[in-house]
Structures are given as structure tokens and as C-alpha cells.
Length: 317
Figure (cartoon, rainbow, N blue to C red):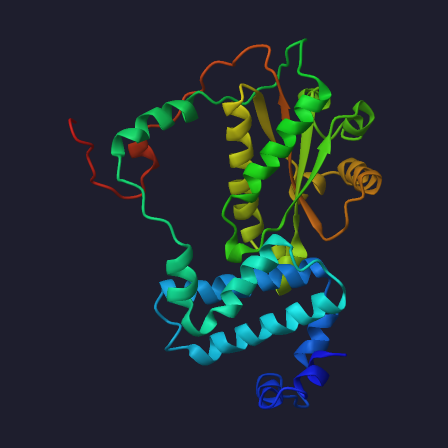
């Protein structure tokens, strides 16, 4: 039974259905349109619409643009129904989160935001310097020690890095990151002649790709792909650094792959062997392992040279 049939059994709701999903010669039934999408696309749209509804409270526009956000709320109902018809697990974490927003829509600020928020942490500017020192100690490592952790230990680190990635911010809460963990030598050798030896010889590699379907019509042209992936990758790098591992974040995006015919062929073979769909945009290969040594500190430009226009002078200068 589809959503329209079910709404017929609930007085008043069928009218809402026709109001929100009314058809015209220029438009199609949103249910039909959404039902053609994959589960991943539906879940991403669900997260995006839920995020936008929540954000409307922070920007104080929920009431003034209530009709717009009511339509987004109705879209969520359609998505839930389609996923239910497909027997998709209702306890998936982002569905549970989204439904909390859906269920409290009529009093979102009090029943969802206030109820689930935490107190702000205390302002502590002195904590900046120790963290800066930690950041400054990170290096891009390309030479690996002979003794490395066992494969299972590295695998657990890889999963922790991916766990760190999923807590990075993403545009519209789309969560488009997709990963492959490479430990097998034969799998790493698929990257020969497109990536350097420090990648092929690394004890652990993680491929980072982005599901371009979740960005809608812009797809691969959406620049948020690179913003979202960069935020996630940096959290992965810092987690590995915290564990005493060396990391090298290696460029592996479309521009590199399409720069030479041989690169295209290598990537096509790699994608085929590793099951990477065409809608996954490759972004990076992260090489991880115990370093043989920590490379020299690279010089960095001074802060003033990085500023477009600033008269700021730090205290004590």
C-alpha cells in the first residue's frame, strides 16, 4: 500500500497530500520521483532536509517561512514511507535522529533543540597553544619503519580514522564520504605508476571517495565535495598522528586521474577491481604507518603574509 492509499484512511491528511504533492502538467508526483532514488540518495536527502529544518530555528526563520519548512517536513514523511516499503532498517542512526526532528516539528525548539542540547564549554584561550603545538608536530611521512603493527591493529586504527571522519562537518549533513581500506599488497600495487612508492609500500592505505549523487543536480560540479572531504580527511590524519603513526595525505582526484591516458586506465582497473561505482568521485589516498623518522619541519609563511587585509597586531608585539 503506497502513502496515498494510507492517507485516505486518515481524515484530513489526504487533503494535505494533495496540497503538498498536487500535480500539474509541468510537474510530477514527488512520491514517484523520490521512489526512483536509491536508499543512499533518500537517506542523504532526509538528512539534508532535517538539517535545514533544524537550522531554521537557529536562524529564526521557521515561523516566517513556515510553509517552506512544512513542505520539507512532508517530504520526510514520504522518504520514511518509501524506506519502510523497502524494509530498510528503521533503527539506522540518522533515521532515528531525523524522526526526532519530524516528531517535534510543531514545537521544535523546546522539544528537540533545548531537550537535546548541552551547556556551552567554558571559554579557555590558553588551550590554543598546546593544540597548536600538536598540529605543528604533524608531518607528511613517506618513509616507513621496518617494524609495523600487526594487520589487525592497523585495521582497527583504520576504522577509528573513519570514525573520526564521520564526525567531521559536511554541507547540509549529507555525509557523502566513502572509504576502502587497503592492506593487501596486490591491492596496493593496483596504484603503481599513478601513485608514488611511499603509497605502494605503506603498511596501510585508505581510499577516500565522495558519493556525488547526494549533491543533487550539481553532482561532481558541487565544490562542497572537496570541502566536505578535506574536513573529514584532516580529522583522520590527526587521529592517526595522535596514535603515533605517520600519515601522508595523497592527491587522487579527477584532475590527476584525467591528466594522462595511462592514469585513466590505471584508475579504471583499480575502480573495477575494488568495486568503486562511477558516481563515487575519487579524492585521496591516505598512507599510514609507523614512520622510520620524522621529517624536518617545513617552513611556513608568517601569519601577516596570509592576511588579505588586516591591521591586527597580537598583544605583546
